[in-house]
Amino acid sequence: MEGDSPTLDLGLVVPAAIAAAWGLRRALPWADKAAYTVIGWFTLVPISVFAMPIVTLLRDDVNASAVSAGIFAVIAIGSRVVARYLYRPLLSRGRTELFVHKRDWFGFGCLLACGAVALLEG
Image (cartoon, rainbow, N blue to C red):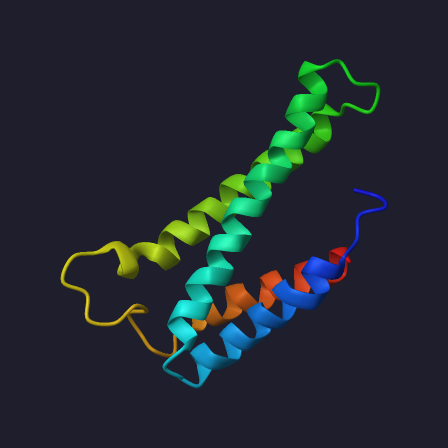
């Protein structure tokens, strides 16, 4: 939204995503927890952002847009699908490590992409 402060994205989320991706790539011990935290953030935020245009549509707001609701629905579903894939090792029984492969390229790429998107939004 216009006028929103990018401080949270640029000051916290982008550096956390980049640090988690870097830590995953280097197989550092703290990287798994950081990655799951950032992935959780990037899963929940699009869902909450998707709710905003839905509420404006339900209230017959002048600024309501079905197109933005549709776009955010696709983004929310996409982030949920990626999170489910990345959280699978965490939620499985008998797991020994959080990420199946310590140098998980998919997780690394997702975290870098999320950081880049948040940076571009700001």
